[in-house]
Image (cartoon, rainbow, N blue to C red):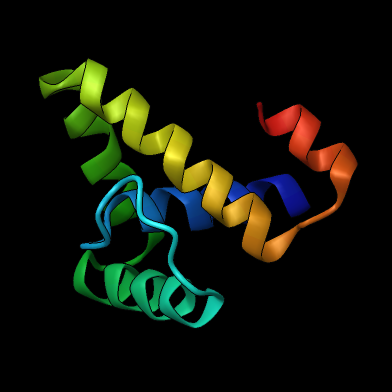
Length: 87
């Protein structure tokens, strides 16, 4: 369950307007995720944005997803063991 929530948050952050490579605060991450979920019609809409990006721009999508996943793990699950799994 926890991994599904982390994946949904990462997809929402991917679909957000935050620039990849940025180091947002946890408050900024929360706000970006909420805004992305609302503006995309839910987490499924965020996943649709993610899938489209992988189809159209796979290289940049992979980079952005690695960033989003790293940020989400850092903000929501900052245990050292989980960082090793995210890498």
